[in-house]
Every structure is written in structure tokens, then in C-alpha cells.
Amino acid sequence: MMMDLWSETLQQLMELGLPLIRAPMVSVLCTVLALLAGVLGYFYGPYWGVRRVPGPPAMPFVGHLPLLAKYGPEVFSVLAKRYGPIFRFHMGRQPLIIIADPELCREVGIKKFKDIPNRSIPSPISASPLHQKGLFFTRDARWSTMRNKILSVYQPSHLAKLVPTMQAFIESATQNLHSSNEEDITFSDLSLKLATDVIGQAAFGVDFGLSKLQSTRDTINNINHQGDENDAVQGFINQHIYSTTMLKMDLSGSFSIILGLLVPILQEPFRQILKRIPGTMDWKVDRTNQNLISRLGEIVAKRMKNKDRGSKDFLSLILSARESETESNTVFTSDYISAVTYEHLFAGSATTSFTLSSIVYLVAGHLEVEKKLLEEIDGFGPDQMPTAHDLQHKFPYLDQVIKEAMRFYTVSPLVARETSAEVEIGGYILPKGTWVWLALGVLAKDPKNFPEPDKFKPERFDPNCEEEKQRHPYANIPFGIGPRACIGQKFSLQEIKLSLIHLYRKCVFRHSPNMEKPVELEYSLVLNFKHGVKLRAIKRE
Ligand code: HEM
Image (cartoon, rainbow, N blue to C red; front, top):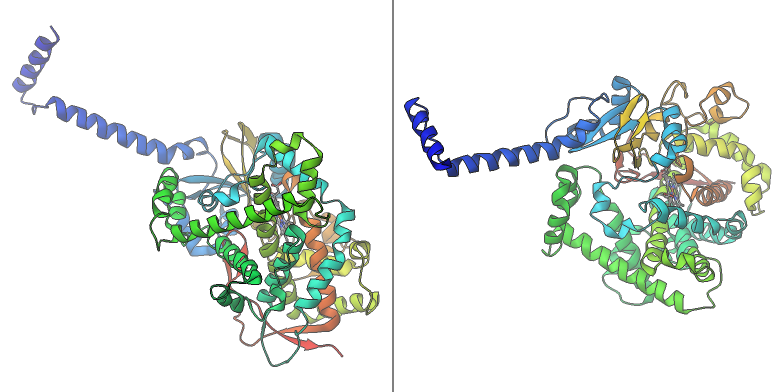
């Protein structure tokens, strides 16, 4: 019956003069159309849910990445001026909803936290499973249990106990600072070694010994040639630096990271293949990460066995907290312990080091600020080591200098969050799973809250000044906002203040003639000085 109908229809088509369509061709056509619909759905599905949010036209596949290449980290300020406080930016196929207004940040970070409690996982992190089990990327109930446990080891009394350790590393790192006024010091190298040593001691209870070495390059060159205990530690650091710097946000990362930006569905299969092909960047990153994981595993296993581990470093404190409560055993398995301990090194070194370098660089270019700062530091007394309490209360101008430098160069210009339910922000309904990113760097340069934003003026943070009184309370939030704000804020401020006090007691700094002007920045997961910060240290009489 059906066959009759089919041949009758064909007969009619032929009579009508239409081309003969064979059954296999029809199925090929249907498959092609279905594939096309699938591809379109895959590429445009995420856009469809947020299409009402304003934004520039996006190019197929790459989205707005060409704009990122054109403007660099400034792209979000440029777009905020054009599209307002909430706009769309497509990282390849993935739309980000960028929030560039302090009140909307309060809404996302605090008021509607229950619907936006997690971070989205950007492509560089998806390519690096090592970085996924730390506090930063864990989600929901696991995150809140982990965060509460970790907070318990960040008591002010514990931080206060770390002052002498921090001071010892600072003294060691700055020992040969002013050997010659004519010689450049790459201050950003020095501050990275210092910050890594301090966090290594605080997180693992291990002295990485970087501050004692001549230069980071020496450290790296030495790694492959020697095999004793010390070099094992330096090897670990080298691997850490490599693993961290490979996490690029633009199109210069490994192939799987680039694929993750453009076609995320292909990222994991390609990573699995490429990591098996020697010589590819994915292979190198994977080897580095495997190495780091096994080294971390060894450190944790050794420390777990040792019951008399003391209570100074983060790893020991977390292990002791884990043993005292049975319920948390399920959360802090040894792989999660390795991840959060490693995360401390990762989150605490580059950020603190960049902040220290940017402060010293900015103060060197503003002699009126330097003069006031030296007066405050000298007024405290020349030899006395400040306590944690002194650091918090006796250096008000230093506080202003730090805040202003962190505003001027926002080390984490973007903070990634993701909706876990449909939620309304700034008049737009955002579906579940929308990536919402807070543009801290744009807020920090908004002339409404910071008149003359490109001028370095610490006095704008003087509590008695009109500008400070009128400013929105969430206009300057370099450590983020709400329950997911930075857990290491007090730790890093304590280290930064101690370092600056020690440095300015000994010397002042001037820009080296070999440093480029204006300074060039690059953006991986955090901001960085592209060619380092080169200074001359002048001994104070
Ligand atoms: C100048 C130094 C630092 C800056 C500017 C900084 C900045 C940030 C920012 C912007 C966030 C995201 C906050 C948000 O989503 O609202 C963050 C999170 C975090 N930071 Fe820091 N950070 C610094 C130092 C440190 C240090 C020293 C540590 C460790 C000791 C650390 C550990 C973390 C962790 C674990 C998170 C994730 C918190 C969570 O998701 O619950 N940071 N940091």
C-alpha cells in the first residue's frame, strides 16, 4: 500500500518535471540538516538565553576574542563605556555576563549569593585537573564545608604567630639589595621568590630557599642538573611556575586550552590524545602536573604519618583539624588536601608578589608619596619588629598606599561566578548556568568613584577625605566580595606591610632607565609585568 503510494508520488514528481530524489539522498540531507541544527544549537544555544543583555556583535566561533587581542586587559573598560554596567562578552562560544558596577557586584556577590554560589570553570582550568580540587573551584556543599574548615585555621592568633617567620624570609630576601646603586634589580623576581618562600613555609612548612638564590633564572637553570634534596624542592617550584604560567586566558595557551575557548566539547578528548604525544604543550603540561601531584602526594602522606607535626603550617593544621572531626574526613581526602595546600602556593605567590612590585614601582615614581610613607615608617621606630596589631593599626598612610596601588593595578581584574538557578540581575533574567563575571578592574578605574582614575593618589583613601566618604563601599574590591571573597586577604596584607616596612627602613627605589615606559602588563589568570619591574635601590643613610 505504502509502496504504491511512494511510486505514485515519484511518478507524479517526474510528470511535474521535478528532479528525482532518491531515498539515500534524502537521508543524507536529513543527517546534514540535523548536524547543522546541532552545530548551530551548540554554538548559539548559550547565547540565546542571554541575547537580551547588550553587547557588541560576536564573530562565529571566536566570539569577542579578537577584541581581547586588540585592546588587551583594557577591553572590558572600553566595552563598559559603550554598553553600560552589564554587558555580554563572548569568550569563543561562551557568553560571559560582565558586571561593571559596584551595586550590581553587591547583588551578585552578596544579596543573591544563594543563586550564584560557585565559580565558572574557565578553559585553562578545565585543562588542568590539578587546579580543580582546591577551594577556588569546588562547589556547593563541599565548598562550604571546606571553606569553614580552612577559615578555622586562619584565626587572627595564628596569623600573628606567622609574623616572625615572614620577617625572617623578608630579611633574607633583601640582604644584598643595595650592593650597588648603579645596578638594576629585577624587583618582580625578588618579590616572587619572597612571596613563594613565605607561602611555602606557611602552607607546607617547607623552606623553598628561593630568596637565598641569585635569581629565579639561576633556580630554573639549576633544576635539571642536580639531584639532592634541595634541588628536589626547587624542581617542585620550577614545575609550579611552569604549570601556573601555562594557564593562559587568550589564544596563546596549549592547544587543548585554545580548543576549550572555541569548542569546549572537544577540549577533553583532544587533551587526552595530545597529552600522549611527546613534545606537545599538552604533553609537557600534563607531565608537569603529574609530577606536582605525585610530589604533593608524597608530602601529604609523610605528614599524615607524622603525628608530632606541630601546628604552624597550613597543611599540618588542616590535617589535625581533619583528624579531630570524623565528619570532615569525607571532604578532606588526601587528594583534596594536596589540592588546597597547593592552591595556597598558587593563589598566594603571584598575587602577593605582583602587589608588592606594583607598590614599590608606583611609590618610586611619586616622591611626595615616598616622603610621607618614610615619615610614617620612621616614626614607628627604627629597629622594633611590628606585631600583627601594630601592622593593623599603626600605619594608616601605608594602608592608603596599598589600597591605591591595588586599585591602580588590579591583580585579579575579573572574578568568575556562575548562576545555579534562574536569577534576575540588573533588569535581565539570566538562566541557570550563566557565567557572570565581576569586572573589578573596571570598577577600580570608574571616574564616578575615583576622579582622575589614572592618577596615583593614596590620599583618596584617607577616611576623612570627601572622595572616600562619598564612594560606593564596593567600588574598590581587589580581594573580591561576599562569602567567596579571598580567604588569604589578611595573610597577604600582613606580609605586604611587613615587607614594605622592612624595605623602606633600608632603602628607597628609583625606576631603572632600562625599564620600558609605560610599563607593559600581560594577563594570564592574574595580571603580571611583561618585562618585570627593574629598579635601582639606594641605601638610606
Ligand atoms: C594581594 C594578594 C591577593 C589578592 C589580590 C587576591 C585576590 C583574590 C580574589 C579577587 C579572589 C576571588 C574572590 C571572589 O570571588 O570574590 C580570591 C580568592 C581566593 N584567594 Fe586570594 N588573593 C590574594 C592572596 C591570596 C593568598 C595569600 C591566598 C592563600 C593564602 C589566597 C587564597 C585564595 C583562595 C583559596 C580563594 C578562593 C576562595 C573561595 O572560593 O572560597 N589569596 N583571591
